[in-house]
Image (cartoon, rainbow over all chains, first blue to last red; front, side, top):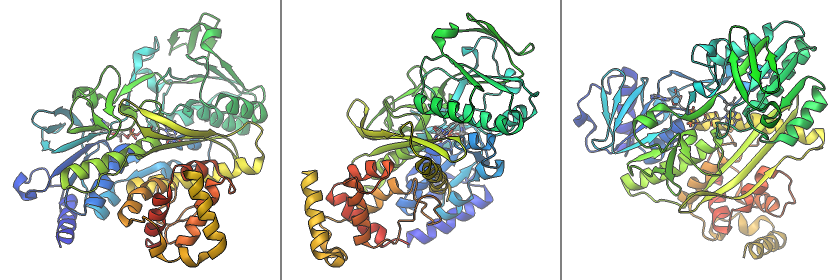
Amino acid sequence: MAKITRRSFVGIMAASTTALSMPSIAFGALPRVVVIGGGAGGATAAKYIAKDSKGAVDVTLVEASKRYYTCFFSNLYLGDFRNYGSIGHNYYGLAVNHGVNMVHEWASSVNGAEKKVYLGSGATVSYDKLVISPGIDLKFNSVNGYSPEAQSIMPHAWKSGTQVQLLKNQVKGMKKGGTFVMVPPPNPYRCPPGPYERISMIAHQFKKTNPTAKIVVLDPKNKFSKQGLFMEGWQKHYPGMIEWISADTHGGIKKINTSTMEFETDLDTFKADAASVIPAQHAGRIAMNAGVNKGDWCPIVPTSMQSQADENIYVLGDASIAKSMPKSGFSANSQAKVAANHIRGSLTGSKVFAPRFANTCWSLVATNDGIKVGANYDAKPDKINKTSGFISKTGEDSNLRKATYEESIGWYSGITSDMFS
Amino acid sequence: MKSKFVFFSIIILLLFSNKILADDKALAGADFEYGQHLSGECVTCHNSTGLGQGIPKITGMKTAVFIKKILAYKTKEKKNAVMQMVADRLGEEEINSLALYLSKTK
Ligand SMILES: Cc1cc2nc3c(=O)[nH]c(=O)nc-3n(C[C@H](O)[C@H](O)[C@H](O)COP(=O)(O)OP(=O)(O)OC[C@H]3O[C@@H](n4cnc5c(N)ncnc54)[C@H](O)[C@@H]3O)c2cc1C
């Protein structure tokens, strides 16, 4: 009964976008959940709370963009395995199928004592429980010479969208036989294998259109995720094209110059014809404004994903410190389901089940050459703990690698439909 | 504990084929709501709309078929690193609850 009324009511509200100007009494005594950030963590949380509470909880999702371009598979777009349109998703399904109130605005601050979110337009939204899943922001000055202006010359492309389009244009337009310089980020950062999958996909693009091009990787680290697997793949598919230089070998990136395209290190000065620089990262700014961070990231209670600073705020995904769980879309989606179950339980008295976390990250090295790494986690009082895991093996046969790639396509379709439909 | 359950379930499968397991009443500890909750872990990859490519659809699967497959991953007889890991931490109650929920979901 309440189900039908609630759903059709919210449908109209979402369509007319007058939700915010309505007096709060219009929502009666329904408990209110506000979610900031409609990405892997936030979209999933908003959907599951709305879907499973069947109208008993009012859910508002505050998301700056009308279209979410996934970071996952943005590397495959660089390699021409996906087109740009296929990595973009809208929020229509959340509004129409689950009655989520969509508010496309920036959340500018949070008042935890008054349980209010302030929006860029000056409007406020009140909550009983708040979910913050804003992803990352970049520490531009972590690389000397890099800046918000420099991102149009040496794109980081670490938040998907137009940055990735720009990077792809630069890769495709690079002069024949030129050098592409890539600077991966220091730990911890979103998507540990991501920079190395990107290198693979750029190499794949060069192999087709610019086979004498070189890729120089100036890494601030001495090792990286799935290293043996990537190195094996680079050797096999792109022999002689990729030079990965560890921090100990180059001695640190002293300075980059975006006008001369030079990268100064102790070892040498490298001149690029095109480049991608991915700086260090911290939790999305709104998490800092809300005061739920401790340094760069936000400590959480492992059993529920509640902030350690405020029990009415949950922090999901990249912004959280989910010790031993990598910052991935899969992780954020998994954490969102734990938080959604907990939030619903505390607002409506529904059953709260024991938390279960999981992650798997697939990467594409070349055509039909997919690799993966995954783990199960459980919640200990002080941290999220890895309980078992696996990783692809070097020397695997090509049928298995092809099946792994096909599995990743299935996963992409699965997770995006889990988030948005 | 775990291996005992696997052993026991395999014996059941061998002896009684699909007969007992096809009957929901025989699903010890099965709980629909718990199954629905647990299925959140499945639908990250197994498309909830059933349009899976590269990963099969699992909604609407008969309980006996689902249980047989999960047990085969548990014993590592069926090969897929992700599914072996998923199956590894599912106990009898979880498997039966999932089987019940998925069998009744389109
Ligand atoms: C190149 C690359 C490849 C990747 N590949 C994979 C992969 O294969 N598998 C995988 O699992 N993960 C992958 N990832 C990681 C994955 O994208 C992230 O871990 C995931 O998106 C994190 O989810 P989130 O909810 O924390 O943040 P996001 O998904 O980034 O969502 C945050 C959202 O919040 C919004 N927002 C932020 N602040 C505000 C505000 N103040 N007001 C309103 N809205 C706001 C943003 O617009 C954004 O939509 C990859 C990442 C990169 C960069």
